[in-house]
Length: 508
Image 1 (cartoon, rainbow, N blue to C red):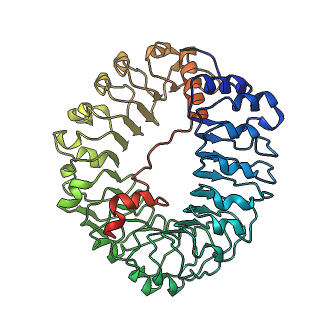
Image 2 (cartoon, helix red, strand yellow):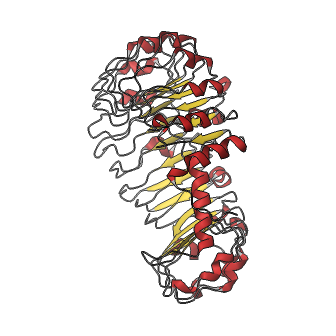
Image 3 (cartoon, rainbow, N blue to C red):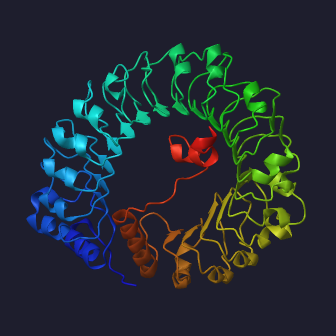
C-alpha cells in the first residue's frame, strides 16, 4: 500500500483515479471545479460514474461535462446556481439534491424528467415551484429549512409519497384529501395542535419530533395506518399519550415521561422502541411483540420483561446508565447482535456463552476488574466491536487475542501499563483506542495489517508512519467514494423501505 498522504489539492489525481479505475461513485465536496477547466475536463472522462457529489464546488452553472455521464444520483448543494439547463433531463437521474441554492430556477421541461427524489432544502422558499407539481415520477420531496407556513397545495394529485417539511414555521396544517402521502416529516415546526383531518389519510410514517407544546388529541389513537412515529425531544410531561395500537416503530426519547404509555405495553406489532432519557416512576416494561431493537439508555425502570416472541427476535438492546433493576431471562435472546449494558448486567449473565454466539458489538460500562470478568467473555467468537468504559484495569488480559473477529477496540478512562503482544493476533483490527502510560512504546502495533487508527498517543504526537498511511488511505476512500449501503434497520425513522419490509404493501 502506498504511504502517500492525500490532500485536497490532489484533485487531478482523484479524478484521474476515478476515470482509470472506473469508479461508479465519487464525492468532490469542496473541490474548486468552478474555477478549473482542467478538473472539469477530467470529470467528463469519468464515464462510469452513476453517483456524483458536487457539494460546494464554486459552481455558477451546471458543468456541460455531466452530459457524458450516466448519472443516477447528483448532488449540487450549496453552489451559486441560477438556472438548471434543459439538457439535465437527458440524464437518467433518479435523485437530485439542490439544497442551499436559493437562486435556483427549475426549467419547465422538468415535468419530463425521471427524478423520483428532489431536495430543495435551505432555499428560502415560501411557495413550491409550479413544475414540481407536474413531475410524474416524483415520490420524495424535501423542503427542509425553508419558510413554508403550510403544506403546499401543489402536492395534491401528485405521486409524492414522502414529504419533508422539517424546520419550517408551520403553525397548523391541512392535508388535502387527494394527496398520496405515506410519510410526513414535521420535525421542529411550530405546531401546537393536530388537525382531525389526519384520520382521512393513510399516513404510515409521521415525524413530530422536537416540539415543546404539541398536544396529542385522543383521536390520534385511531390512526390505524400509522406504523412509524417519532416524538424525539417533544415535551410530553404530564400529558396522556394517545398512541395508535399497532405501531412498528416509536421514539419517545427525552419526552419527560414518568410512565409507559399503555399502547406500548399492549402492542403486538412493535419492532423498534426508544424510551431513552426518561424518568419512569416504578414502571415495568413488558414487550409482547417481535421487537428487534430496544433502547432504555439513561432511563429508570423497575424491570424489563420480554415474552418468548421478543426473546427470539431481539437484535439490539441498550441499557447504558439505564438503572434497570431487573432484566429477566436475557440469556434467551439467541439472536442478539448489539448490546450496551453495565457490569452488573454482564456479571449476572449465565456461565455459558451460548446465548451470545451472535453478538457482534458489546459496549460495557462499570468499575470492574480483570479478575471479575467471566471466562466466557473471551470466547465471544463473533465480536467485531468492543467498547469498555471505566474498567479498573492497569493490565490488558492476554486472552484479548482470542477475539479474532475484532475490528474496533476501545478502552476508556483507565491507564494501562501493559499491552500484550497477543494483540497481533487481531489481524482484522482497524481501530484501537487505549489510554496508555507510555504510548510511544507501541510502534510494534504498526505490523497489524488492518490497523489504521491508534488512539493512544498524546496530543501533538503521531503514530507510526504505516498507521498514518492506512488512515490517510481509509479517509480518502471514505470521502471520495459514496457507498450505497442498505438502510440501517435499527434506526428506521424517515425510511419507508423499512416499513415495506415489515409490512408489504399488499398486506396493509
